[in-house]
Image (tube, rainbow, N blue to C red; front, side, top):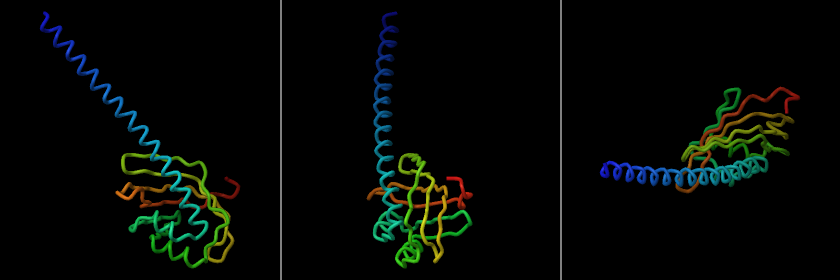
Length: 160
């Protein structure tokens, strides 16, 4: 009987230690996720500001070399396309800021979803619209990199 009680006691201790270690791991994971979310929020803000200012250097730093953007109408753009457009100066935004942002992190992959208000000039025409977007980032040795973006069609007027 003492032998069985000893085994039960040892088993409880081992289970307790394992649960404690798992709890610490979960807490650390939650803290890391929060750090990642803060980093990605700042990166998203930096990217939107860079687009607003046609700052190709910052855009190039954040965008992955194999980056793809798919717009609501099916238009597909690459990193080179976006940098060329920004460098040309034909697109000028006075407002390029997102709101209602959520950031979800799964290990080395993250998705930033938000509503974007774009106001300015695109292809020589005045624009003022809202879209929803989801941007996918992956963690690389040098940090987070924006690899894929998808944007909705412009939202109906009056739906801010």
